[in-house]
Image (tube, rainbow, N blue to C red; front, side, top):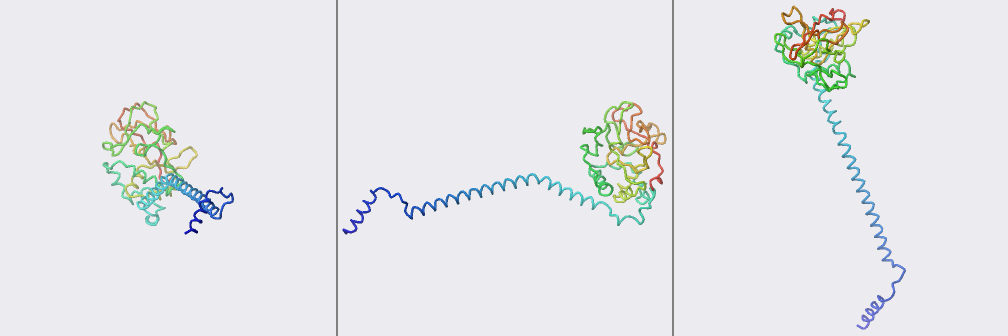
Length: 303
């Protein structure tokens, strides 16, 4: 018992002594553990911050890329849809390259289609089908980025999303046609084909034929009615010319179409795509031209 008391007394006595300035092995080990723990915590915090930054950057990139991804997927889906609707070249009629204009009309039985005055107006999807077919077959670099949709025409003034002064609707006794969306003064520009027209390359109309044969029957026939041949300047060759918007719905006037069907717009010359008002045109009046202003001999373009 006495020994225990002495030891206890000794410990008590030692506790009252000044602290030894040299750290014990135990205290050094504890300090090292604390330092390692702090270092580990620092590293862990850095890793956490790095992970958070990676997550934020990844989230930002996903947010930025998502529209592009969806646009790409939409384009691919649209491309596939177009491909399914178009006729592949292997299914074209035999020796399609030699077909004349009349041969093409007969092949698609277009006379019946042309006589149908109850054809609906082309929808936005219809115009887009024609435009994408043109891009796939004729000109892969062609961009259709006009803010005015083809169901309204095209940007009549450069840099302004304003359509030309007409709209499309059914024309009594003529099927689809164009009508003035406001009063138009004599001499005023009504249609500017310099903006909306597209020209098929080559003088032999091969690309035009391939374009038409790739289309569903109704669209193919419509194109034989809508498209024309023209020289764009005096030294030019004749080319097949078209527009892939409502401007092609402008009907022709003349005595052969009966009273009240006199043209009220005409191109300034046979090379121009600009149509000017021959007289004042009141709002909602049908706009009529005379397509005989453009000389037609299909053999000049290989048709």
